[in-house]
Length: 399
Ligand SMILES: *Cc1c(COP(=O)(O)O)cnc(C)c1O
Image (cartoon, rainbow, N blue to C red; front, side, top):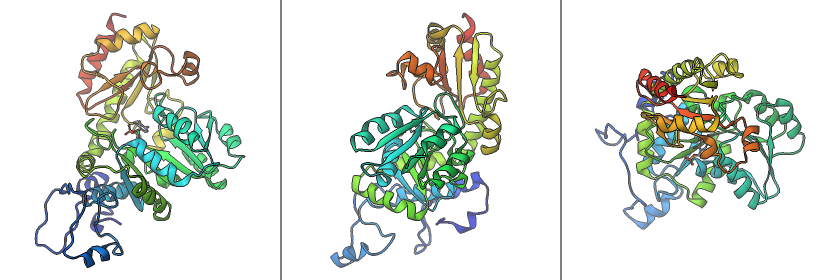
């Protein structure tokens, strides 16, 4: 399905830069960059050719069904993921809704880890519950608990490649095998890893979900999502997208495509800087605990390094010895880190999950999720790492 067959054996960054230009063989020159086709519909010379377009695969008729700029993005990410088909959405949550509403029916059951992105948790316990789907939450890193949960029938197993905010890397291969053995579809949210760190479908996932708001877009200036998978699995997903209309706009698709051009470079830098920050903070007397998959002290270190080619992505979580007051003072003193809840931006960001994404949980529930009062989540941006380390040291200094 690649638009450029000569690219298939080339490196990740070469493909990320060249993929996705709309082919136009009938004219002697084409725009060198992907055009933004900002239109609702497409006009035809005659009503007959309009009617005919409905039976011609790949023809453009109305942008909720197909748009050239959106197609270019979908094709590019599909190629980087090794997927046969992709659907792009207005946000990551629209993508999660898109894939799950295509598979699940009232009365079905879905199995998910208890440590999962807050928005997805809200979707399972809100939307899915209201539509008659039961969610079973499983202790994230307990394989025996997954086995037990899958003794009963389940339609979907949902997991993340790196959990938020404790940055665990669960045994995706084992859970994929379990899912297959039980006939459940395995849906994996790979937002934290991107296809640069992990080709998640090759690991046994049936579907991959991305919040492209984060690393794929990469500049903190858009909301977008993607679902990818095999052609047959994706057919009902495309149908549901056309029915429900959670589409990405052509302009936002163009911005995500622009972000993709530098994905490999950014993920290398995010990962290297995050590791430098994590190592530095691990030595600081005010820091009790540091979570980052590339640290040898991380409980899933070996698996993470094998799966992610030695890189740990750009997130670092820390626990300050002084608890909540100390964490608040620290975060308020930061100068280069913006106090903001997103991640995967060019800017570094810092947040206390207990006061943001996980604020609705009791302190017992937070403790159960590994979020103690001094817990701070850092998204390491593209600044010079020495400047980030100096900023963190300054903010920690007087505690
Ligand atoms: C942000 C995020 C989402 C939701 O994406 P939106 O683009 O905000 O809708 C889903 N999963 C993970 C892991 C995320 O970090």
